[in-house]
Length: 344
Image (cartoon, rainbow, N blue to C red; front, side, top):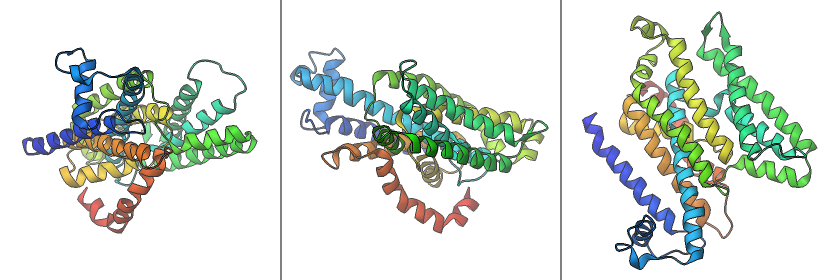
């Protein structure tokens, strides 16, 4: 593990540099370079003597503190959550071609969000996020219930159940699209493309409360995930209950993925692609894999969002950017999946 420390620190350094670069770029110019952004942050933290020359006008201060910072933090948290969730799913199912959306997270969340959009009245603040999260959890719960027989859950049956449940919720979303008005249909479609346009500090706080402790918990007990990857019989012989352990890890992965999807919409490929890249660079030891997946996922998501904000005069949904950047890698992955599956 000591040999992996320097590469992990380099990844963290790349993330920090990309953070300040993303902070300094956008349709509204704040400063001229990364160092100016660092000075602004120092000044806003109260070190006025150090950052005196980086004082902001009111417009720049609002853009920086209320728009860019929460968006960047939410982007990082989402990338970490989807990547770690993907790594957990792949370890639990012993299949490197699965991802967090496999059990119906995306289709359930899409149904909840679409339902909130067409509702003629608002029940409570943030009902779209709440309903998206609720139906994402409900979809996974139904998948797990259908796959459980005599207190035993087969990974294969769980995957098949997830496909069926996902298809049902996708059909329900299609029904909602069919009956929705034009404006509602555009809003549903736009949400399903994914994006961080409406990021607020409240979203960052909620994600932080759920995502960071969950990832930390998964890393702490990642040694059990290593044992689970050996197979149910081997795990039982080593004193690990495979059903309970798998359920615990899937609950963590589903929880963090559902929270992020409910806030930013559907962003595909991240949970499938990033764990693969981390596995090729750092190996299949989940004690390192979860940490590297979190860092690489945050970097990738922040890179995609920065491109989405700056590529054209109008913002491109990040789901499109993620798919375009990820497609060449996934094509290569399919061409060489036999070697990668064997290596994992």
